[in-house]
Length: 83
Image (cartoon, rainbow, N blue to C red; front, side, top):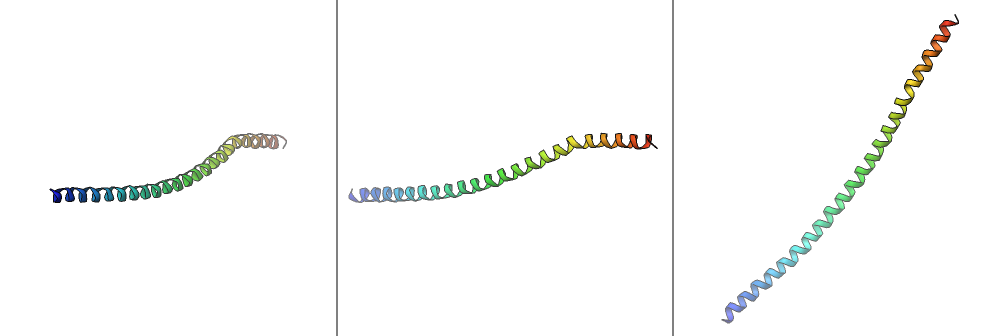
């Protein structure tokens, strides 16, 4: 009977030690993963901000080009009309 209790006690102790080790290992792994995700998100945010800036710059040109074309056309007409 004492041998059985000793075996059960030893098994429970080993299981608890394994559980504690697993919890610590998992927490360390999760912290590392979270750090990597935070770093990845920061890089993505920077890329998104740069892309947004470029799109705004492009849209500004897309708005200004037709106005410039109209002015050039008007200047051409005026130039050739005065000759």
